[in-house]
Length: 159
Image (cartoon, rainbow, N blue to C red; front, side, top):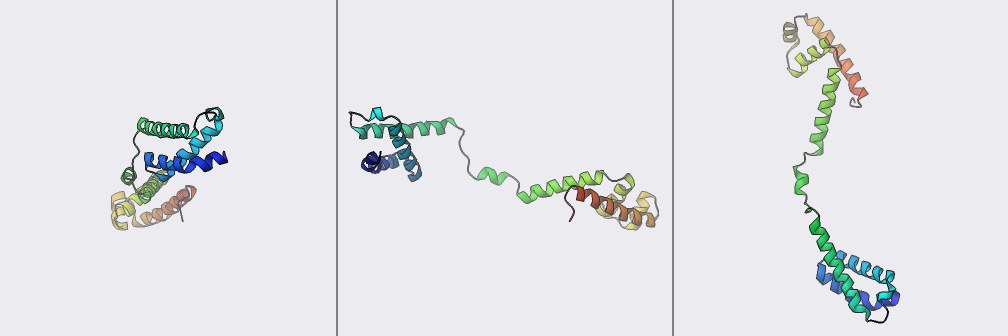
């Protein structure tokens, strides 16, 4: 095998490089060709070896081209660019987790958080909309935030 490699690897590599136009593929073709020669020593006996090696290399190149045509075409990075960035996905996942955590709160706590934080109302406006005293809005907001923090900690999201 060493003598076979020493005598034929260089010309075989040049031939494979001309066929593929790619150094790495050409190296792979040479390696696979010599591996097949090692597995089939009966093919090397008697006849000149180089034509057999070049035929095997050509067949490997043709087989690889046919295999690539049989598969769907490979796409570049353009398809990955269409996917939302990782931070956008993280934000969406966090917002779902927060919404889920808010869903675990009592109705009174959820209502006060929605009025004060999500709708941006003052304590007085929230009290008017909810029909409760301002002090109740303040106390419910305090306990709602504590309960929300616990729910977020359970989900691994609280600092």
